[in-house]
Image (cartoon, rainbow, N blue to C red; front, side, top):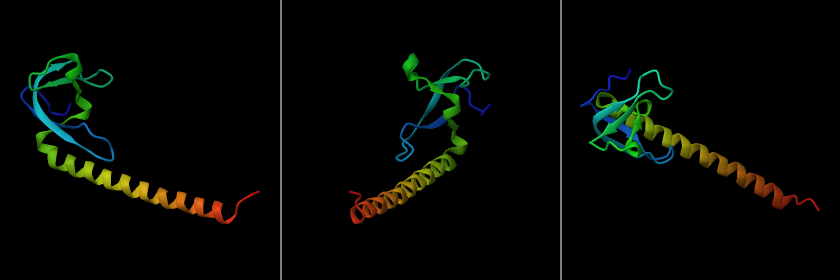
Length: 103
């Protein structure tokens, strides 16, 4: 589906939307089928325990790594901008409450 096979170098985000943290590794095992709900599961750098798997849909091949990192960083900036704008709304609501207390 994504051109990922054993030996492919992949990248995935382990951080949050606000603070992305991209990791990379080489696929050493693939489990499942492409038609599964989340697709195949990938195991990286010989970590083949169940808790070490990564869903294929969350991984990007090395050829797209730079673009993937740029998108994650852009999304983090948008998230910060949204949070900052909501802070202004809350400050306005607090100001209105202080200036017009309902008693």
